[in-house]
Image 1 (tube, one colour):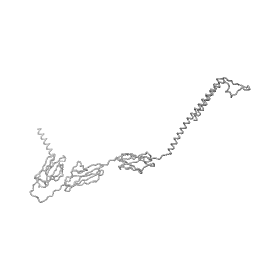
Image 2 (cartoon, helix red, strand yellow):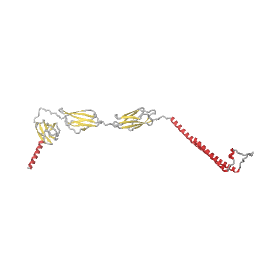
Image 3 (cartoon, helix red, strand yellow):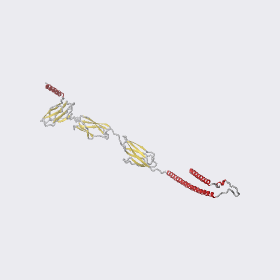
Image 4 (cartoon, one colour):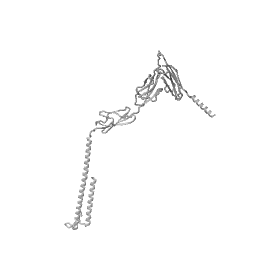
Length: 414
């Protein structure tokens, strides 16, 4: 009983699965044809949701088709019997989901030549097989996809577009701008089939925005009245100008028209002045060119004369001071020498006088027998030996003091 239940459940599941399978249809309009007739087979109910793919097989030549091989959608395929060597051909559709379906086409042999002519049906194939831009095929191309987007760098301002048609009898026409502008540029490709039906493909080419330039190069520098050579490598130059020029007329041309420049230091020019040309690139980068000025300035002889006289006066003043100082030293030495001699002579004379006092008596009477009491001769009176020596010492001290005072007085005024 248990095995029976399991079998029933299995059969029920299989029935459900089979019931949910969507089988495609493969039908042909005529299975019995004459040589030269076309046979059209129709593919329908393709399971798109489950990505069903139908592969078509036949030894008959395909005249035209609006589905790809393998087919992923409903469509029609027309087979031609104009070139056959048998009386029976199969046209098979094989599904990756639902198996194989085959139709057999019977071709009748014609023993007598027809006197009537038939007109071949014109092709309606207006598909492309690829689109080529500047020798590069568009990635992900599909003939059923009619719109594509391509991006190019800002440096690209022109492109070459080429295509390949699926039917050699189809023609095409490409319309679009000659030059690319920044942003979107639309090109339309019209493919016209042999039966005069047209399919349009569009290609949108986007040219990117230009990046901000960092170019700070100078193409030329012109200075009125002077020849200036710009070598293109150095950014520091030397220029000798007239001694009377204190400002120059400078004109600068930049390689990048979006860059800008400023001139600094072009006033009150002297020998050694520096003129700066400061360039600012579009992206904000800054660079500086320098022109170092040299000039022969007039010699200021008056200034040199004044400097020479000043130096001479200073030298003479130094000589005078040194001479006077040396002279003063000599005078002092001489005065000191004289004072020493006088002092020695005075001491000698004093010693003589003392000796005389010891041996000579001075009379206190004059010729008339009167006593002499003259204050003027008081110093020559006979004194005791000790008093006389003390008196002489006092005189020497007074003489030395007077000499020191005179010396100090001279030093003060000198």
